Image 1 (cartoon, rainbow, N blue to C red):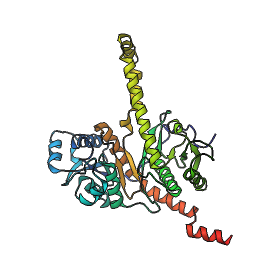
Image 2: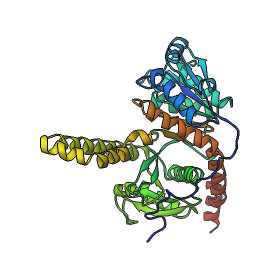
Image 3: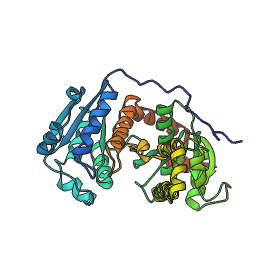
Length: 371
């Protein structure tokens, strides 16, 4: 049995936060399909469950104040409003959002992270714009060519698997995929306390001869990287929990994610249709309702909402655009936890180690010519 197979970390001790200092999360309150009617209630619920946290809600002054006037919470004193004069539309070209809307709620929220007023940013807005603005404002960590989108997906054993990239980079080099692996292992180590998480390379088969040239070369680099490389894995291994980290390019990752979401929705709708077909099936559904509720809870995508734009000099979490308050609350919790556990610092540390293990291209060329 190869390292990492079937591990269930639900009962393992979680790492403690690096500091007891409060963590402030900047929220693009205008982003997503619902804007302040979702982001503000979610922020207050998050603050109620997280006494050490602070939230700065960034958006248009009028809509923010109008939405907040309808709410009441004991955590209201830890929520601050910060005005912005523009909003990035959901389908706006990323280049336009970057160049033409420098006072958008998204840009201002990210600037708060850059200026260290906040330690993390959460937005349900335009994904392309969020990536473009975050990369321009925050820059990437040393040794990282491109940020990736990383998310935790549920496994059948009740745990989670971290998958990246889920859509930020549709064309990648083998070296960049290795960088994704380093970032994924640092994220899992920081969040779950697994010092050497296993890494699987998503491929069309487990055998070393399988895959295109990108996959084969990436596998070679991963085997020599010093990471806990499990080997090639197939799509079905993601939800088996075969490895703690799954690496792929953004094209493959996004297709796999959207297909998985579609299957989960289809299964739930098929079950619902069968249990409401006639009087007899409705009676059976009544008896089975506790099981159905548990099933719905386990596959509920809201519980896993929030994808990390990993590799930046700051925590940025992308919420699903259609997220309701519960889903957005989970994205806020993810951003808070990553900031509290110093994910960026751990990625930088691991990248520094990787550079000592892997010779620079020039040095490698000299060594090859000397040989």
